[in-house]
Length: 275
Length: 293
Image (cartoon, rainbow over all chains, first blue to last red; front, top):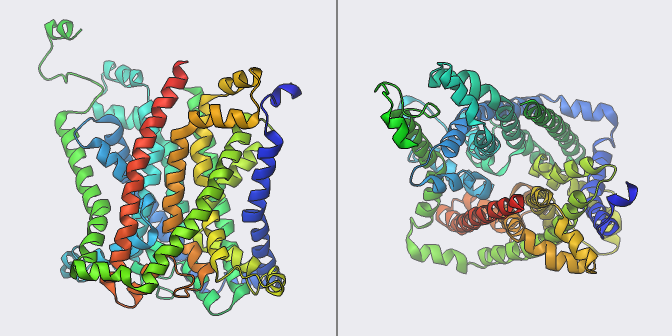
């Protein structure tokens, strides 16, 4: 068995190359962040973490990211369903457009969304008479985070819809279920793990997002300031330990979201195994 | 089959197919999606080009004659030209060792490859500032030897490499996993050495997946904002890439110029999407061929 593992050549070389590369790019620099964050001890990290301005930024970053991810859950499933199940002219183009937020540089998305939703912009000017202000408010951050998160839900759910066994739906129809019942009772439960995975992915991306948010948010402390922006503010004030401490908080959050997503994916795999 | 079905006494109220929605539901859903995508995804793209040309073609072209803009374009190309090949080589090596061999820590390695997708770009830039910057632990040593990483091109390259290294590996791993390695083993029994196998057998097999990964990697490398923003220091004519230059122009209220630079990056994004769609289609084809064998 041990001999069978390495039939093909290049194991040592490719693994060695991968590990050296990851060490230089990831592991060594991460050590720099940890050293800096804890240079002033645990107490310092915790006191920076609990500064009122930092706490306010968590509410903005995590709260709005969560709301945006949920909305993406709804629209993402709709998009995935239509793209996976229906055949109509232009479907391929719509399918390609899904990835636009992923391909478009975040700074470009940021200034474009700001131009659209500003008070004098094409959509902002329509909403302004109703007293709805989007740009430079939390609503603006929500719009930007929904924009960048959409592909994650669609691309996670779409393949699962494609792989659904039509026989199950046929069986439901034979047993007298109408289409809505079939969707609600049969299809949706099968999609739930992938929908939750997609939402978690969109949430993870939104929490760390920077470029598309900072133009439309206005970056008002306590109101529309996201945590990544606060890190850059601290850097500009030469508060390196503070920036490192907040960076550490963001890393821990990212790690927790990663664990959650892996758990969801494992659940999805298990359910598929049973089916 | 269709003839058999229609000859049965079917009541008109029963839908012809039980596993799809009525036509009106389909039309409503498709229309909703078209409107949503149009307003939410395509409209921002349209605005970029509209604003870029709002002061006429003359202003648009003049933007790129400006030395700071020209330098930003140049620097973006340089950074991508270093980062993308590095990450391509890494992606092939990582995919090779992860899909061809079983070893302790393999799944941890796969998670590590995904890491940049989870880390905020700001934090990605921050780790390099904290390591190679004047305040970082390697900073004093680097300064002694006259090497500047932060607020200079090496820092921009490092940050870009970090943010974009998963893309090639991630597009290759599922493809190489699905294709298996029978052909490689056959080549080996015929006496080919490792490099021969890589060049003559594996690379042709994964060609479209590789192109797909490189395209994504390049699109992100040229468009990266958060990570490079932290390490660049925004020195005009020195460390400003195109996305950073957009920010400066925008904050100086030079909107037409900012959108002009943005429009170039948007065209890059559109071309990337087109190539990506084509490469995806080709990869699907290859996968289907692989599963037929």
